[in-house]
Image (cartoon, rainbow, N blue to C red):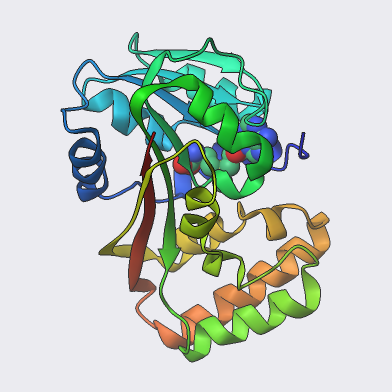
Length: 249
Ligand SMILES: C[S@@+](CC[C@H](N)C(=O)[O-])C[C@H]1O[C@@H](n2cnc3c(N)ncnc32)[C@H](O)[C@@H]1O
């Protein structure tokens, strides 16, 4: 099991990370061939429940699994009766076979070991069930304020890897005998955010959250300074893509 990197930043994570765009849930419904209303969904690496709440908001019955009791405490404090919560490992799911229409990994698939998590997802799904892995990706490569922060991260944050987002998960899923059909869907959207909220959001990214308090404050200070130069009004309009892999059994 990987370390529980998000528990100590759970409240800030929930307050400052962005939601997922509504088109993501349309994409999931289209892959499922049915509405999320009354669908049985297993949300793995559910964290504080940003995706869990959106799935439940569309009427799905969601079982939220995460190995972090701290993030799950936030999820529990904000959930409805449509959400059940279990502490567990995405590489050894605490669920019975063929119980779900959809298994989701919202920004969490890359934390699992696909050699174990793929067969586990397949086991949890019924025949023709759908696996969905998705990430909100900031699309600011090449902008000086962002490149400045990325260069600082490369120097000072050992866990930082700007190319991790480029992994071709589709090829890995396709190579598995458990899934027959895989598609990549890119959903562009944008976010209007204050510099302070954005800095607080980045404080919850694993490679920043993992630093000691002094290094973390100094790295976030560099981000804040760069953003205030680029956005003197204190607000930024930022482009994102929600990259989604959907696969069917
Ligand atoms: C970046 S957060 C995503 C949280 C949430 N799904 C969201 O959309 O905001 C990744 C989550 O995966 C969880 N996680 C990482 N490895 C895990 C594992 N092996 N089993 C279960 N959960 C795991 C972490 O505890 C964390 O809550």
